[in-house]
Structures are given as C-alpha cells and as structure tokens.
Image (cartoon, rainbow, N blue to C red; front, side, top):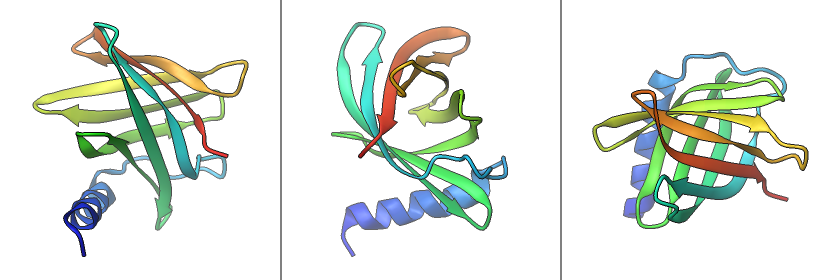
Length: 124
C-alpha cells in the first residue's frame, strides 16, 4: 500500500467519526472536479470524492501538492452543497449554490471572512 493510499484510508477512517448528517437519496456520489480560487486570485484544481458509508455521507477533497483533505458537516439538498474542512489550524466553511449550468459555486469562509471560493461539478 502506497503512502497516498494509507493517507486516504486514514482520512476515510477519520471521516467515519466526523460525518454528522445522514445521507439523503440525493446525496452526490462519485467524483466532482473544479477549481478553488484564493482571495488573491490564485486558482488550484480540486477534486471532491463523495461516498456513503453505513448511511453517512463521506467526502474528501484532493488538491495537487496538498494531498487529501477530509470534509465534514456535509449537507446537500440539490440546490446547495456545503461542507467544512481544515486548512492547517484554520477551519473553513464552504457554501455552494447550484448554478444554471449545473455546477455548484460559492465562498469558503474562515471566521466570517471569505478566504477562497470554489466551483465544482460532477465529473462525467
């Protein structure tokens, strides 16, 4: 097992403990791809991976150079997708709204301040 696979397994094991909301029938599954844009305008490709474990929504975000980051407090109702993640010592809360083209986009906040934005859509 490679280091990346061990890290991914550890993130998934942690998410089993962190997932708080029960999965709905509409909860996204599979891989979503998009871009995370910092407040300074720097763009980073991201990949969100959604799964369901024992009725709990689980997700992680993969970013080149940063590895996998576990997502928690996941909520999805078809019109909005929200989640939290930790970047170093800072917790960020992302609230994405469904766009007319089917993608989800919105800000990521830390302490009430917008520190980045993200736009993702299901991979085909």
